[in-house]
Image 1: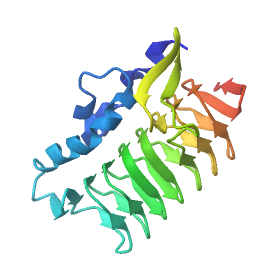
Image 2: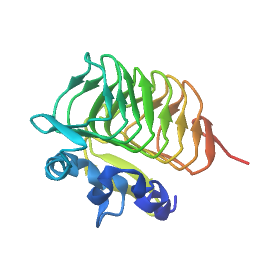
Image 3: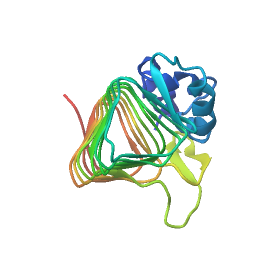
Length: 223
């Protein structure tokens, strides 16, 4: 695996997120995960009062966003313009929810960045993860963010495994990725731009850009 495939610029279009500044000086996208909380608190104070409502301690919600009254929202969090947060969504904090994105019914978010137009619309769990522009997770698809032995998460690289120094790291889902229903993205999964994951998949490691993940060991290139 060429390490350059894991670089931020090869996975995410930073122009499609309010969180672009969090990646300054970083090489790999997961390096942003420990910085999300403080970044939200810093940026939140600069948001326009004409566009955003300061809805609670560390909570900023765009006035054009659509948030169900049954949604639970704990700060720090920023919900960007025209985003939709549906019935019984559970936002546990440290989440940046992008413009025109969809957080669905009973979906849980924790320490994550959701880029513009990304969708997690039905019964999803997104923890310690980043979803790129127009990424979509089918119903029941989740990120698993903690290894069973609680050890540090590593990612395959060209010279061996890259130590992320993180015990909690779910997945990096690149721009325009489609993840099928009831799939599990195991800790440290990275899915390249434009790839598709079959439903009911158990995904681990690196999925190259523009690929079709059918099952472990069977990955086809999109034609």
